[in-house]
Image 1 (cartoon, rainbow, N blue to C red):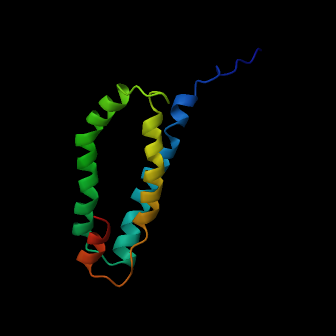
Image 2 (cartoon, rainbow, N blue to C red):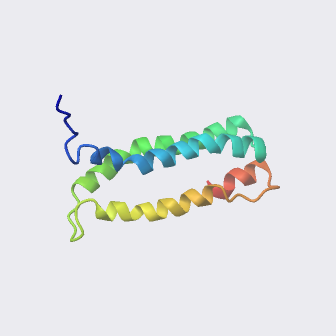
Image 3 (cartoon, rainbow, N blue to C red):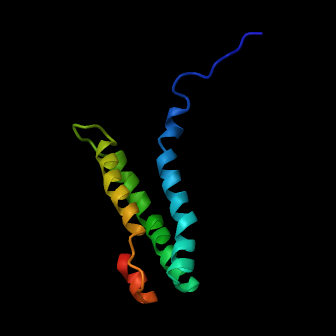
Length: 112
């Protein structure tokens, strides 16, 4: 029986999203335990703060996609968007650098 292999490049489009998926899962998995159990933030307030970025994404994603699709730069169509990933990586690290001993509102206000 002849074994057929997967065509080259078939998994490559999905591999590009791996970093984005892992970033989102880490934030979702770690935010509630760290802020609620360690920093003692009220769960209702934490839920509200975590909902704001989701609403912002719902409003801005169509605009960002349109800009990305119509971008014509000397580096390519998607490259300028990929450079923003560096800023996102720095922001991801900053999420967890909240000083302890703050009140609930000060803890939320630190990175809001």
